[in-house]
Image (tube, rainbow, N blue to C red; front, side, top):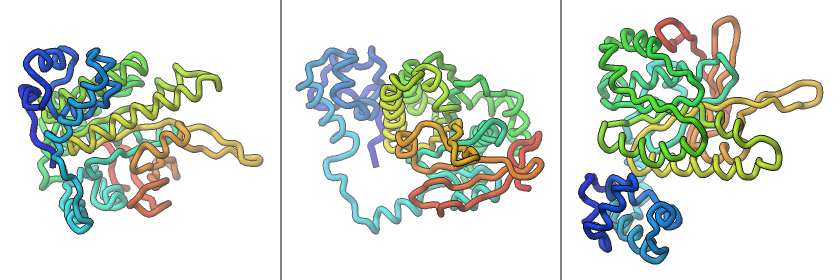
Length: 320
């Protein structure tokens, strides 16, 4: 496991003295573990350190944080996976579908059209993460990156009351971040969110939605390649954070219509970049009346097309 780092441990890394540590902190890098997330090109860009020195510093940072020998036997990895604490939605059908709840060190994508429960599920997870493990949570705080003005404090209060949590304290444990464009989103992920993870016990990161800003800013086929590169970059950073800090990450995603003959099929936006960048893809859709369905679209561990039914009430997301 990575070492627990502090805001003063940068000088413990070979090649970093007080002056360099001060430079790194002035650029928003808060610890050795945070530094270990960067690649040489990124470090050169924000600090003007020479490429050779950046390479040496980052190699030392990775060795300091992760150790030199990181290979483990498959049997030990299996035990690590089985010992992971799962974050529950506390919707029995969904938690059963997810084999006990969300796993850390992974990215979950909730895709679907408007009104199928993506944001509602994110609100519920922002509450359940605060519960103790014996009740399905992990005693953690949440970051809610709101790109579509969808965060509702009133909704959080209602869900908190359902789980017998104090609504004010529950809201106090959710850090809402508003972003204005894709570049701002990338900066908030690389710096603000990492700082909150290290200082505010954040265990869950929610981005609602991941695709909205990129679709709005990079319009037309001539900008498609750039959009996909930038989208891939933010997904890569989220995965770096998830693996390094052992946290839970959920994203919501919009859909696009794909003509097939005389009908149109809905599929998640973002193309192959998003499909390969997340760990578990879950498609949400409407069923009959007020019933919604969550279906496994792609996952390394969940059965393809397996599904769960749920409903949305004034108390949050519930079993039917």
